[in-house]
Structures are given as C-alpha cells and as structure tokens.
Length: 141
Image 1 (cartoon, rainbow, N blue to C red):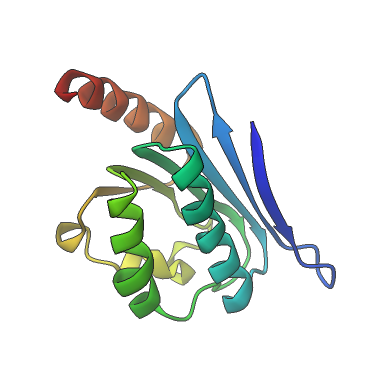
Image 2: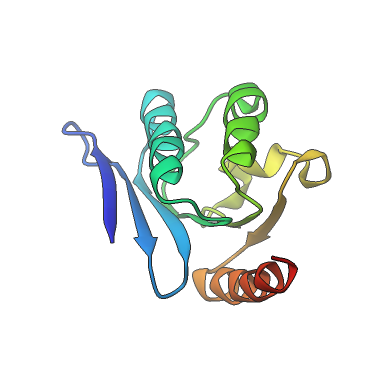
C-alpha cells in the first residue's frame, strides 16, 4: 500500500514509503541524490505514517542512492530514533548504498539504539532477516 512519496523536481531524487501488507512492514525506498532537507522530509513522513499504520518492522532501502544524503546523525539519534521507538519500531533492516562508505546511518551505534538495527548489502537478505524478526516478535506478543 502506497503511503507517501517525496520527489525533488530538480533531479527526481525521491523517498517512497509503502506498507507491505503481506509482510507487515513499512518500506522506505530512497533513490538518487537525496539532500539533507529531503532526507528529513522522508524520515518525518515515516513518523507521521507509522502513527497511523503501526509496524515494529522497517525495511530502509538505500541501495539506489548515489551519494551522501544525510549530514547529521545527531538529528537521527536524538529526534527520529526516540520518536520511532515510542511509535513501536523494534527492527530495522537497512540496505546500504552500493558505495556503502557514504551511508551515514552506518555511523549510528546499533548497540545504543532502542531497537535492533542490522545492515545488509541486498534487499533479499534484509527481507529474510525481517521475516525472522516478525516471527520472533509474534511469539513475544
């Protein structure tokens, strides 16, 4: 189910947010050169939509990004992360950019987060891990 998209008319970079009903997770797909303002809009859109469509699972797909897209881990760590956790986020599968050293989210320390964060090189592995998390989450409920 399509929830939101932000497209930059200048270069057609985008962030699309969907709810994958069969999998019970939200998916954010980032494409092109996403500047810091676009990154915040996309991240904030997740927070708005997860309030209406709660999910403990997020597939964050950066595989189609071309360059560094987020300048501040401070905003992620101190604003986005606590809000996402309060809204029920428990597992994040993050697919890194093809040129992963530009992927700023890898600078977050997964052990310091209130949810589990795993990094993947491809979407298939990320999906497999989220399915395992979903099964574990259902058993804990």
